[in-house]
Length: 395
Image (cartoon, rainbow, N blue to C red; front, side):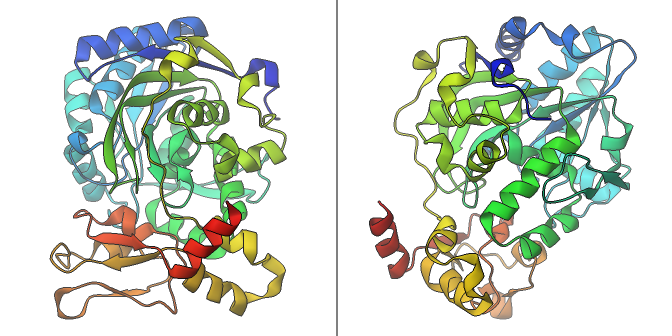
């Protein structure tokens, strides 16, 4: 059921850097107005900690949830008597296998968290079929086995932009409970952005996180979620609602919330009112948390849906994709022909002849999975002339 508006709350606390003591103090401060960790975790419960582990890169790149935040949450879960289990499923560029997960945890600092705290790392790589009674678009999902094993889910997103969904945020973070290669199918079958946003909201209903803690100490703006600019924000944020969290995140960084597809669809579905003023902000006042100079992503897939109605047919929409949205272009000199983009592409639109990735315009669906997956930030998103014109018209 949609969360009543009066219950939507987001708590904010200052956290200047990732010093472990400072993160621990900020986490306790941000949870205090919500009732503390004891409100969400009971003794003996297995608690799934779901960070954003987009790719196997070090935490200094701000692509993934910082291990200091994950460690602080794990310790509070243990103090409440819970058993923390860290789990995620990266895109298809990282195999969803025990070896692939181990490599992901090692690179992102999660292995270190487990070693220091005794938290468990999920490496079984099992897949389970789960019903989603509240799903609007999807009613059954194949999900990572850790989700079925958990008594409580705590989502640990990273504040970043996203070329497709404008913000990564709390809602998009839970897409990681879907195993890597299975994510690709949704990009193919749900090419209309509102449909994709509906699916992401359905995943939130499936995972049903009891708590969301946002790593907004150092975020990412521009062409996120992996090739943007590091942006210091200096916050930890907490909420019981992924949608409320994303609404206040948008307010903090200066992006109109209803320009975020998942927030727009959540308002249309009655999950929230669409007015961020109706989300209660606890702790640090919102006005003190706002930042200036945060750059939104330039990619704009909604142009296709705005100017080319879905009913006009596949061929017209394909033309709109090609000429009205930004296209991924591998850059010679940065591309190492590692194959990560090719593995991540859900429609097999990428080949690597002569040591340089090439994207087939006839097949590309503008999901930007290649842009996410590239470890060298070698895929730029180029804006066609028509897209610039449509942007001016829309503005």
